Picture 1 (cartoon, rainbow, N blue to C red):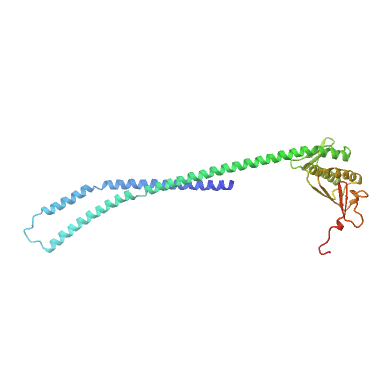
Picture 2 (spheres, rainbow, N blue to C red; picture 1 turned 135 degrees about the vertical axis):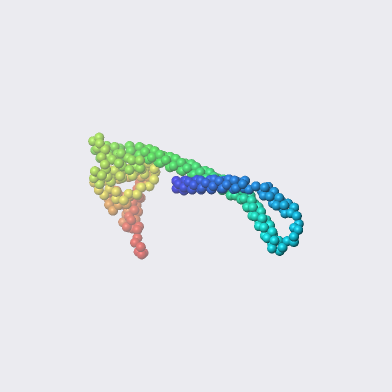
Length: 300
């Protein structure tokens, strides 16, 4: 919409320049018309016709020559008459030309083109106005959606902050304080001794544990599925056992899939698939031996 508005502004400017050119042409045509009017006003048609009539009358009033007119005299008189008639015709032609120029001068055409250009300019300005309205509407919608997204992320962060803090406190024995969550639910820092520290300053094990608790809280809050792939590889066995119980509790409201090459961290005796079996179900838990389920391509 912004690009279309820019193109419309360029077209509007071009139309404005064309309108100015048409107005200049109109002014020039009107000036030429005024000159033609002046030239035409200088031609005295009645006087010319009167002069012609007087010449004809004088010719008719001439007495018959007493002496016979020679052929040379007759030719000379005829030549003078032809010259005078030619002069009269030229004057009449010039007058007709000037009068025709007055009638067919391009003033009307220039005015019509000027009106067309003004209409085009008005239409371009209207399109520009409509595009500006569309752009403003889209911008308002984008800002509203951004504000709604920010508010939603903030509310979800506030809803998850407390359970994440409680579970992480239970895991670490109250060693750490509250977790600071950003608008996009990204962990921005962890409170230690009253000060917020960046997570990169903690060990990989603490970061993995905190990330797992946060993911479990999100899955539990949304009632959705969660896939974890050896997420506790840097965690000691005592905390792994604590996570096992947490996984069982959260599994009642969200489906949790754990991929691991260390099943002993998550399964007690009796929860393993029996020899020769690929799957075993117990209360709230299904254990699958993927070595018996996944086959390589080409294997039969």
